[in-house]
Image (spheres, one colour):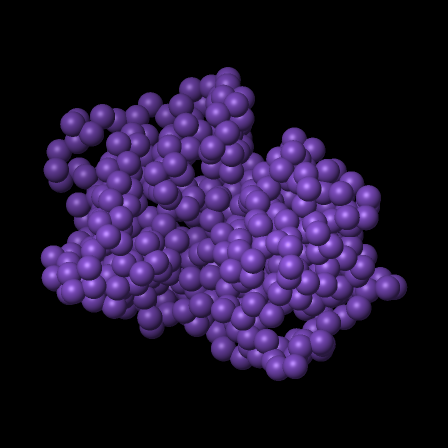
Length: 194
Length: 293
């Protein structure tokens, strides 16, 4: 990267610190985003893991979700949601009604792999990566439907856990909890324009 | 595929950061907590203020109460066991509870040993008054630390004391020479490897929450400023005049702890807070924070 890219991390709730540290290590300028004004000048936004109902409710206040939607639709902002973040981005959430952003043409099922005692880690084949990725799944969602133009990048036991659409990424697992920065690097280099 | 790894346990605790975990005693309260934006609920038969008032031996809650609460909400559900009572913990793990609090709020079952938490797939949270205590619990397998504070008092002073103790000790160790770490481990009665971790990273290897006496949005914001990763609220919500409103306000205060205008806005017109107890009215025996070591 010649010029440092400007990326935000949605810091309403969740493990935003881990994403921030990883992006900073890769040379990005990282800003914590809690209010609409914090989005200004950003090329990308990472929405962390956390509790999706909490993040959804807090983002619906002070017009933050509308501001993110607008920044994406205006063509600039790349958005990557991990776990709770992926739920927040999905157009449809099965079984539950909760405030969400809904900009990505996918449907998700929350806690699809069970409660915490069933949380797990496993090696995942990710399309576009040359070696498996150690993926941590924590009360993870599953992407149960993808729309046209959505590319499936990874499945675990046949179930979709990584989807890409335009400048949007949804991962059901937590790349920020491992030392492996390949996905953060790709997000910065390929999806974030400035 | 591996379940119950350290990374899966401590990683789950990371997901609570910047959030509020609320004590609830009924499915209705659990729904109010979820609606307010809680990141998890602690399922209990009695909140600490009632345990304090009613006396007697306080034990793990009836599994029926816990199961009803698990069925009522989609957010994670925690529950408490007595210090050292690993059979209660086995029961909670079998119920599928998401997190276990080995808690001084209940009557200790073992005055010498805490639970060997490595033996469980389900993660544990433990209370600590200082860094040595926090590191001992982490060495036993705890995936999350919280201040003990003084539960059921609505008085934040002990939580502040414990948070400052831990953070001050971390800063001190960070500034040490490497050859001073072994003596520090001896003084703290904590494992050398964990003291080294603190020296290198300037923080605990697990998340660290505030608990025990948080009653207002300002209390919650204060604890965040002192370096805590999030907040437990026990009696402070459902012993107040308007629980839904107060719960919502405390959630907002934790997220926006550094924004005084938002804090002012959410602190307004919350109704009566819980009455509260001054700590000098409690005898040494009545102090729950003394339980465990």
